[in-house]
Image 1 (cartoon, rainbow, N blue to C red):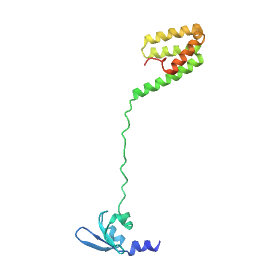
Image 2: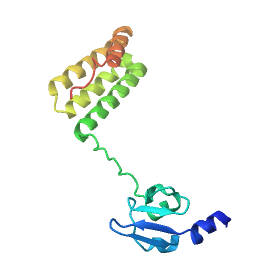
Image 3: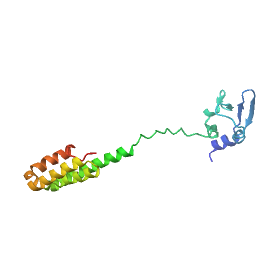
Image 4: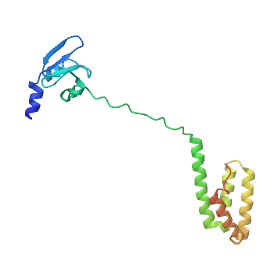
Length: 163
């Protein structure tokens, strides 16, 4: 232990003022028991005038540091139904693009749209895409041109199941 620390802890004497009376002398151990506050006026040898206890480095350990308040942010509203629908739309777009790119001349992507439409009770859209899928199957996707057009429509979001 350094000599200055020993002197500060055991030899230095502190006085404090409780608002009406000056009290002391106290060692650092004794002043702990006095329940002084941060704003209590304290003096010890070497000081020119009284200071608040919080400004004296040797006494700062007496005051428990309270951590700053945690600022909590309220989470944004999360509508799970809309999020699930958005995820499904994205998934369908990827599946359609892959089907059209790989098997577009057979119209498989149109059959996929019709199946999704039928499961969503969109009978009109399901029948339309089913019949277009059959036409693409019979004409080999308009000799590939129809498949290319459908691929572009899928990527731009114009060709998709109804939600």
